[in-house]
Length: 59
Image 1 (cartoon, rainbow, N blue to C red):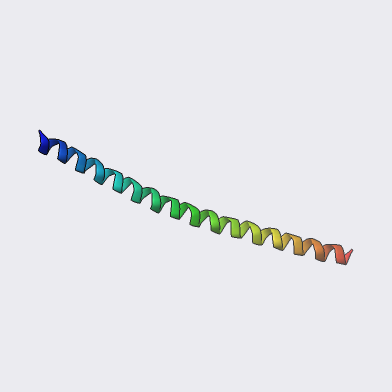
Image 2: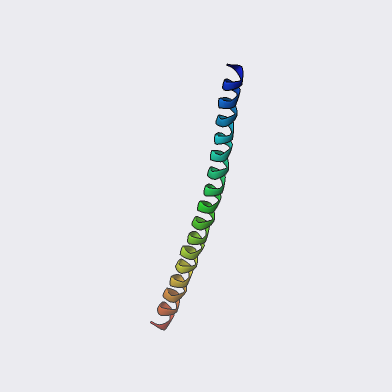
């Protein structure tokens, strides 16, 4: 009985470790992708702002 319980407990621990590792990697990738997108959005905003200022100066 004790060995069976230990095996189940060890399997559960391994599954939890894999889930934590997967969650960490997934979170890291998601954060990286979001960061890239945010950078792109910010650069686009800056470009449009610059264009607007140029247009205003032309007028």
